Image (cartoon, rainbow, N blue to C red; front, side, top):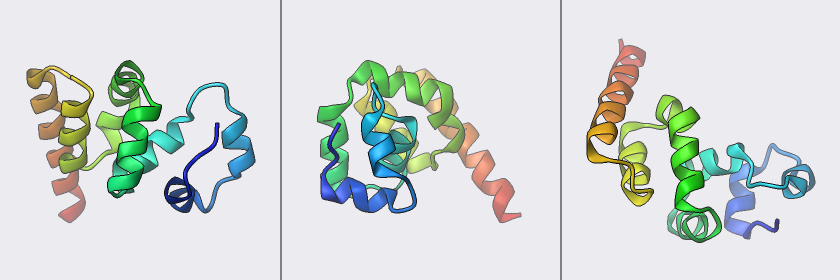
Length: 101
C-alpha cells in the first residue's frame, strides 16, 4: 500500500517499505495518524481504512493509547457506540491525569 507524503512524514522512524508490504494497513500507521495526524492524513485514513478496521484497532489498542480528544473523535468517526466511547474517554482521562501527577 502506498501512503501519502503527509502520512509518511508521521512515520519517519519506520521502514516504509516494510510497512507498505503488509497485507493489511499496519496498526502503527493507524495509531500514528489517529494520534498525530493533521487534516489530510485523517481524511486519508477515513478513506483507506474501513470503519470496521478502525473500530477493531480502537477496541484492541487505540482505547489504551490515544489521548482523550483523539479517542473521542475516532470513536465517533468509526461508529463506536456512545456509551462505550464515554467509558474509553473516561479511562483515557484517568491515564492522562496519572501522568500529570
